[in-house]
Image (tube, rainbow, N blue to C red; front, side, top):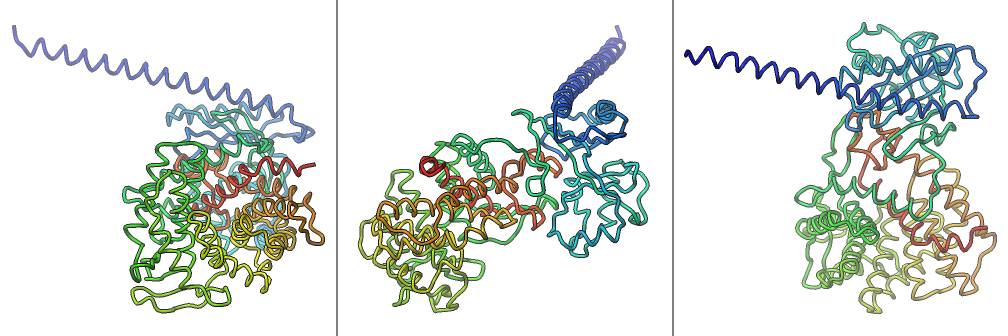
Length: 575
């Protein structure tokens, strides 16, 4: 029998079978994912129908549905109808087409219902941009029918507003619309009239359903979760996962990531490298994460192999290789990192090194307790007398930490000399969290009246500015939580200052701890960027294009760790 007559039908049967299997798979996938979306939308709809913040006295409802699998930018549809359910059904039906066409697993589903809107001219809109700093917090519709309408998250994650020019960027707008609407005709100009709007919103993710904030600062961020000890650990552990992913094979971090342009920075800062490792070690003490330990070891070794340089047999410095600088703060944070490493992992591997780094600090300390800030390498000559007040606190904190590790009095005496200088020169005026760390560490061993007063003044004199700050600067929480430790120690030693109200401090700690979450990449924010899983649970700076830098994550971890560590102390003073 002719072999071809046998083989060809067999090949044909195989291809048909493969096609049938694929069609069955696609059908089953589509049915499963559509059902999943419908289920999530139904739950979100129930929440919205019972929301007292939603204005139900309207003739028309406008609804947005956003969906992603957590790995790609969210698909967004919008619709309007005379009833809320009708608008949701229309937007959902449109989203189901996307799910089928692009095979999207609806892991995160978000519904936004327009709750307030305002028709404004383009000139009025540009005037509004003059009073916001890189963050317009409203959605924009290009026509009253919402045929082209974008949520505020779409606007900001796609650079649709040019904040330098204070106007809509037609180029970026068209780029996004082409992507969103799959090549429809581009706009030739920005309409002379726009509609700005705000929403009541809910999101469903793998952990549950959450209402999002409706006010300016926490707008579009989940609310209502208590910052108890478990939640504080959860925040830190999740953030540390981002840092784990940032450590390369050689121990160097991906220093900065821009989620809009999807680019990594080529710049580096060894001081922030060290501080980030310090924060990772704090998380490890709570989680015992094996992978975290491995990355910590790599990152510590990177500093030793690339940045530790010796002036002589007894003196060492941490070098910033990009410009051959010896920065006082780098030596200070380096000591913190190495001492924390040895204490966390019960080793004395770096005991000789930290002493030599400490001698480097002493070499940079002036007779009056102040410091010289920057030397040059390789000649070790003085280069810059002063750069930032942070270096002073970092160095003094490190000296006190070194005393705690070695029990050598020379370190404590040097730290005390600097605190005397800070007290005499009113360093509380700098609102510096590192000064607070230094005071706290020194007063564990010497609760001198002037030192404790310096720490209390650093809280009292800066409390109003911290509470009223409109950014998510995490060092504020570090200052407040460390200040509470100082207050407790001062109380034990019967030391006080005028107009210090511990109630205000406690309220400020809770307020700032919650406020900082406005800079956390929760799913509801991350989903509008490319590769949301890459930035999920990290901390960003909104005013700098939502950048994520390792020290953004570090300082948030430090602040929440201090809050966790002092949780019982906070409860003690909470009324």
